[in-house]
Image 1 (tube, rainbow, N blue to C red):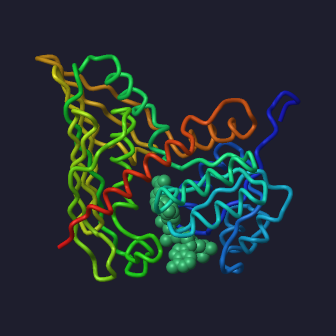
Image 2: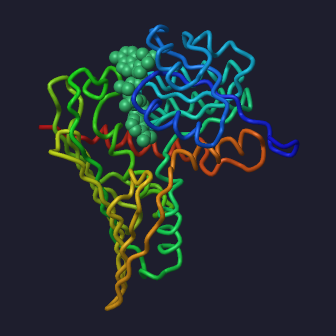
Length: 325
Ligand SMILES: NC(=O)c1ccc[n+]([C@@H]2O[C@H](COP(=O)([O-])OP(=O)(O)OC[C@H]3O[C@@H](n4cnc5c(N)ncnc54)[C@H](OP(=O)(O)O)[C@@H]3O)[C@@H](O)[C@H]2O)c1
């Protein structure tokens, strides 16, 4: 590394789970980031994963947070662990990149905001999809007025969850399809509308453990109507997003999970149709790069806890209005 290279952010990772190993470690490694330690409930299991990825230390979570050679912590734990470990990390002086949903409700986000204003640490919700260039382009098209006045949005994210012991089945662990995948279309709708949603109705189906496994909601962003659906009992991946204005429409066939594949955006205005293509990128890597620049003070975070709060308030309302069968 040359003398002019910025000092690397030193990472600790909490949780030796699927997304940590499948997405975060490769993204951090690809950009040459320094991963100091992996936190795991079962240190032996953590050590095996750490060795596979050339990480020197596997530790209990609390011990990892006590190290002074770690600047930033990634929290890749099940949803109900996000609040306690985000607070513990902030209090230990670490910056936090925490998986979505950052919190289970707006009250949890407010507690993070209080801790943040006391400590000055950064907290970022790891919505990696927002870092894909296709999302910047969609925002640009909607803002430009090319589609006319925005009227309608439709977004879905569903898949098949085959693991019977997964935390997503268990409400006590923050399970449920709205928390797991409904948050993606909600987040993109908020991004495009630029206003708070009102929840007009929400319907769902509960699984055997009591978590919502399939859900549908109708939202209003001022005059813009939005339909959202999500679930994890579907036969396979079901993702798409559409925005329709008074003059035209756009459609993203792969809005949320376009990692390292070519992505397409279809635009149709009057008789004119076009497809814009995006070269494969790793949006986790782009997110990590931005977060590191923010940690080094080189740029402000693109989305702060105010955004996470608005997201959590909308989720609270959806869950409160959820009528189940
Ligand atoms: N941004 C994305 O693309 C994306 C994709 C998938 C998931 N996610 C989010 O990432 C987080 C983790 O998802 P994942 O699929 O990686 O989860 P996972 O592998 O099922 O679990 C992650 C870790 O959480 C801890 N954990 C899980 N179940 C637990 C339980 N019953 N009791 C105590 N600890 C438990 C474990 O930590 P130890 O290793 O320490 O035992 C586990 O390794 C979730 O918040 C999810 O919403 C994000």
